[in-house]
Image (cartoon, rainbow, N blue to C red; front, side, top):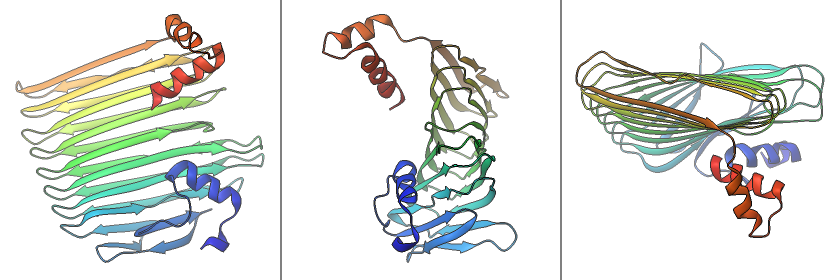
Length: 309
């Protein structure tokens, strides 16, 4: 495995999966549309799909304190990579899943990765899912990422999802769909940075179908230069449930941010709230940091770093 990795691969893995060396436990590393290395564990089986490109990850009931890494690397200019990954999480399991895609495009052609991830969470299971996207490369070709995430949660399941888009992604369209059963709980946090003339769209539909289910959607984003962001979440309450949607964005330069948080109650017992705030960096924040010894640019970068952390 180590001999198959190039220095740029090591850098991308560190950026998107916080990996420094080989991961422990179950993992699947994909590069330029092909399997690079895979390892299953006693409780987590990773197998190649027979109908679509991608993998099935089966996590045994009762599995505790294990991690699954499934990073994707794309370094070939002009490649369009599409992958379908399905996660079957058994009852009472408690696991961490680390995904993400890093694109290094040194050419003039568009490079694209579209990851379609489907999660099926059994009763009382717990999942923390972290997905990071990052792009770089000295070439003029676009770096495009269009992820789709589908989640189905059975009674009592808990899922915390952290979706992060770092620098360098030319354009992205993220689609997230979730259906929650009785007493299921979803916490979905999205952190996004765009710059230059990049575009990013996030569409969400969360359906609270089971009594006592709840969702918290949090979006924190920074739009710089001439970039354009659109945040379009919808929470649908179909029974006695709770939902909260919050969007906070910092806008800079000539950027554009559109936030349209939506809530739809189909039951008189649904309790749903949404809020959105878009604004610039407060001048007093910069002044305060300058009194601590930072110059204006350093103060600005520190504020943005803290905001997105």
